[in-house]
Image (tube, rainbow, N blue to C red; front, side, top):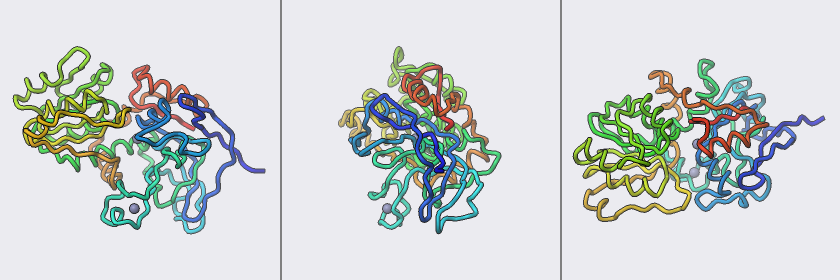
Length: 349
Ligand SMILES: [Zn+2]
Ligand SMILES: [Zn+2]
């Protein structure tokens, strides 16, 4: 008898269904993973709410589509050619399946591999499922002292590490983080340990600003009733030397150049609903700003893991809402509505 499992599929925008399907068997070089925890990411929410992200639509899946890319689990089997020492190990699932052969893969930039697929981005199914197969080379064993939640949050943390690599903030200078969702918060966590001052954080949700303060933000602004640009200029005189845009909003794209200091460097991490990035040209030009586009993580999982363990980053505090797979609709709805003070929603399949 074929073994069955539960799997979440996005039947239509806003509508997740839990279906019973056969457990897949691992092909050549693949591992079969019993998925234990999946984080709900902002990019999943774009797909969930709008049925598209950056021009890629639900229809591109060409059938039932499984969302989710922040996953971890335990390897139960490997296919031919897969590393058998993985069997029984808890692993972090690296969601980007790169080609390994193109110029960018060979030059250490697999995050921009033009031939890659990514979990939970059509047409590639994601990990919101009790079992999944995945290239064994992209299943990273983790030690037992790491919780399931921490393993899931390694993905956003690795993005933060990559983002800091790109923008290269300098100790003793000022920084502003616009948007305090999980991505903004991992930035604050890392920046707080990089000797930056002040660390300015902005978000429209007060519970997120509370979290930002706990994690090391020295000054917070809620743009609903405060002027973030003026506040930053008052604090820093000429603006923030480094800016991380982690909200993906029309307003924050405009603000990031206004509140940056001359010769400032800006990392654009947020993904907007409308596929447009707008800011005042004259301001960016006269200040000679560097505006850097941050594309996911880039070979930074190992360093994210090391920083998590050595610096005891309070990553697990972000995972404050858990749902079983049978209630994944609720998990995504709650995350989508920014409800119940949830910073990172986790589904346990
Ligand atoms: Zn993510
Ligand atoms: Zn490649």
